[in-house]
Each structure stands twice: as C-alpha cells, then as structure tokens.
Image (cartoon, rainbow, N blue to C red):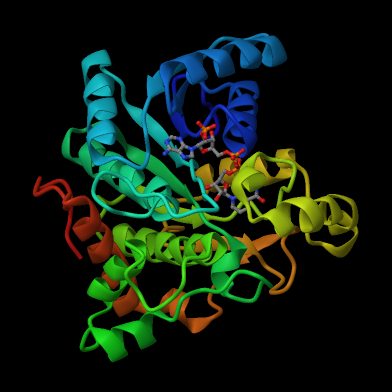
Length: 331
Ligand SMILES: NC(=O)c1ccc[n+]([C@@H]2O[C@H](COP(=O)([O-])OP(=O)(O)OC[C@H]3O[C@@H](n4cnc5c(N)ncnc54)[C@H](OP(=O)(O)O)[C@@H]3O)[C@@H](O)[C@H]2O)c1
C-alpha cells in the first residue's frame, strides 16, 4: 500500500503502549481512518484525545471490544457493519498477562483469551460479513518468547502433553493448556509465550484459508520494556529485571523503543500478497531488537500439522469456525 488516505485500519489495544504508538504512526502516515478498538469506549475516547494532541489530526474513530470475550468481539463487528466500515488493515495487537490466573466467561485463561479469543472471533466475523477489503492485511502480535529461549519464559511442550495425556491429540492438548488444565503449574510468562506460539500457528493456518490477495502474519514487535505490558508481570520481573532491561537492554540488543516496536506492525502492512502465513521476529536468534526475519527456528513454527492444530484449538476455545462463505477458500 502506498496511498493510505482512503484506507481504514483497526487497532486493538490502541489506548496503551504499542497499539497507541501504532495508531499515532498510522495517522502520521496518512491513513484515512484509524479505528481505536479499546476495552471500553471511554478508554478509546481518552486515547483519541491524546492522539489528536500529538498528531494534530483526527482520523480516529472509536470501538469498544473486550478481546478476551467472544460476545464482545461479535458485538464490535456488528457495530462496524452498522457503520458500513471496510477494514484494509486489521492490527490485532491487544494482549494482557495477569500474575494470577483469571478466566474469561468460557473458562479460557486471560493471557490466552485476550490474545486469541476476541482476535480470532473478530477475524472470522469480518470474513463472514465482508468487513475486510479484498486486499486486507491482518497482523497479530507475536513474541520472540515463543522461540522458547528466553529465561523465565518456558514454552509448554504441547507435543509431549498431547502424547502423554491426549493420545497425541494436539488440539485437545492446546485447549487444556489454555484452560490451565495441563500438567504445568500456572506461570503467566509461560502461558504468555505458549499462547504466542499458538498465535504464530494460527496465522500460518489461517493464511491457507484466506481469499487470494488477503494476507495474515504474526509479527513480534520485539522488546519495548517501556510499554505497559509488564504491569502485571511477576514481582521480581517488575522490580528487578525491567529496570535493568530499560537501562542495559538497548546496549545488548535486548530492548528498544516503543516507536521502533510499533513500526514493525506498519512495515508488515506493506508486505506483498505472497508474504503471508509467516511469523516475523528479530532475525538474530538471541536478540530482541534489530532487523526482522521469518522465523523457521525452532522447527515447530513450520510444522503444518501443528499450525492446523493451533487453529483448530482456537476454533474450539471460541466456538467460532471458519465461515462457509464461498469467498473464503478452505485449506
Ligand atoms: N512490549 C513488549 O516488549 C512486547 C514484546 C512482545 C510482544 N508484545 C505484544 O505487544 C502487544 C501490545 O503490548 P504492549 O507492550 O503495548 O502492552 P500494553 O501497554 O499493556 O498494551 C496492551 C493493550 O492491550 C489491551 N488489552 C489487554 N487485554 C485486553 C482485553 N481483554 N480487551 C481489550 N483490550 C485489551 C490493553 O488495554 P487496557 O489498557 O484496557 O488493559 C492495552 O491497550 C501485546 O500483544 C504484547 O504481547 C509486547
């Protein structure tokens, strides 16, 4: 995309951190309409006021959505339909991670739900109701943590859980993990990176089901410790690790600015029609900022059966499947 003036972008989690900064950059880049999708209309309105002050522009409109709840995501899409919106860039950025386990109304843990449940539901609903433009770009926030090599963040071994407890059925294993019914003790950072692995799988599987011309990618913004993300991190991480990350991180390639993190989302919206189904993150395996590349390591990112299992698990967690409309090709 080069001229954005007649284009519409929807950003979830637009009131804070990377979502807010992405909304600012999108307005600066000339996007005609920037829909601020936030947990409540008052949060979206407050974000809009701050954005107008910062950009001296007002392409912003508001949408209330709780991305951890199916019903809220459906209602948000109904509103968009009533308003006659057509989305060119769907930026699924929202995500939370609570120190204590909390669950959505269907029993899905909130780290998983806020990242996957509403975002999947919105995407399916939009596909069903023609809310996405034919060349739409869908970007969902991933994380380098899904590579499984960050201290204090363990990606659950889904294959092992499937083999040992569910006759090899990875869909049921993922569902159990998202409901904290797996064999692991709850740790929000472990849930976080495992949910982000499923995000990468979901995007890969969805790319095979979208109409030609639409793309979907998972994109890690890298590490931006100044966002609000760590507000619910474990005590030690908040009090010791984060201040260290903020000071020493930039020198070690382990932390960067909110601006450059959000920029990764915008760059992904400009990728061509053939760049789809990938997980983009920092190319260097042990760094969290710098140039991005398609992640093929660990091998589980490119395991097609695992990707499909990830997508199927999210369908089960939400009860929302791929629309049957003939415009949406199945894998
Ligand atoms: N910052 C990093 O280093 C980093 C690294 C890798 C990936 N990410 C990803 O980047 C994305 C944005 O995070 P951030 O760093 O910008 O953190 P943030 O400042 O905490 O922003 C998170 C946003 O998500 C919203 N959100 C969370 N749960 C929601 C729900 N159920 N319904 C609606 N909105 C919800 C929050 O709304 P409220 O204000 O209402 O809670 C907030 O606007 C997340 O997906 C995160 O996993 C961040």
